Length: 315
Ligand code: UDP
Ligand code: MG
Image (tube, rainbow, N blue to C red):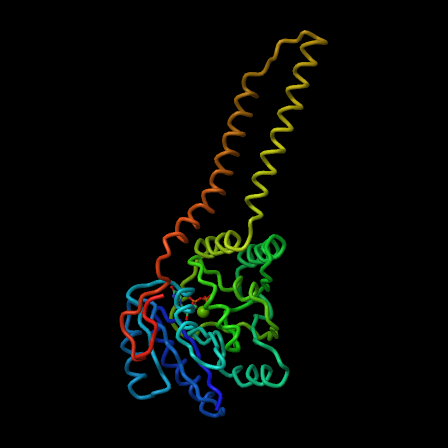
């Protein structure tokens, strides 16, 4: 029988987790797979871990990995991929925004139509504040233009993959992880399944506007060098402008013998150029800070507790 591992990152999901477990088990027990639900406790501050343990005690389809602190969803997914050991792997949120009822259809698509993965996206951005939609759309447009990762607007992390694809992801060992980009970068044949956005059943989202902005900037920096080239081209452009103005001033001096006037405008230009230089340094600094973290080669996650004896605890 083929095996499937369902990876579920959980951070403060005490209300949603029992519902998720019930629903997913209902779906999976009807299918003919050797399934495992791999719950990852990402340093929750509520009773999530206790709930995981009590579920795992009753059902040996359930394994849990509990981090020593909050490492973030990307690290939780990575820990899941490293410990999946299954023919098929699926990533799902614990809050029911990724409906377990889609699983049979996704498995069927992979089986019958020869795809390596089935990815999901929300149909539209209904129910989202317009300003957030605007920035989200702009982000996808920009990142697809300037990077070689193919990132789909509205894509969720909810995705079913074959073992080969998971192996490729595990081998992308970068510390700054941006899964939406990684999934696109590794390639493979992917089927896109659209579904209506679902609100989370309980608990709260861990994202606010500021966190999303940071996430977007990280995504761009992790998958594109375009900001660096933009900054250097900008330097070339400004140098050319300064040559032209210098030429203008010399000519004016020669023809009209006009002394250079305009102290205020000079100061404005100096401040403008100074600001630009700081901005460009900041862009370069962003890349250097990423490099700094990468060179330290710190582990992505540290597992403190688990009921899986063979689990990779630090990677
Ligand atoms: N999550 C996590 N670690 C974090 C933040 C979130 O493991 O630091 C999990 C969370 O428990 C949920 C999933 O990632 O299962 C998606 O989080 P959320 O629902 O807050 O994001 P949204 O669906 O609003 O994008
Ligand atoms: Mg959610």
